[in-house]
Image (cartoon, rainbow, N blue to C red; front, side, top):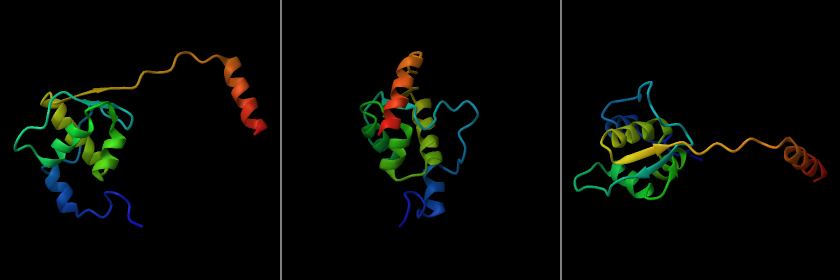
Length: 115
């Protein structure tokens, strides 16, 4: 069974990113970062960029975009950095949950043990 992105020719991935392999230390993207398109795909735009903009019409996680494009996450992050620099997408991290109530967590744990 092949895994997405694993059977792609390395030269194809190199071409998609223009030879770039990293995104730099100030990369705002991790696996769960939500990406939202800020514009429609433009004529003549790289096909992967256009596909990302279509997928991110609604908030979509980086890992979901990579899976849909069948590209490694690292390559997807490079493409997302391009779009972010051009102002075509925005990125935000999911909101963190409120402070957990220890009593509720204990009840959940007891419920799971009883299964």
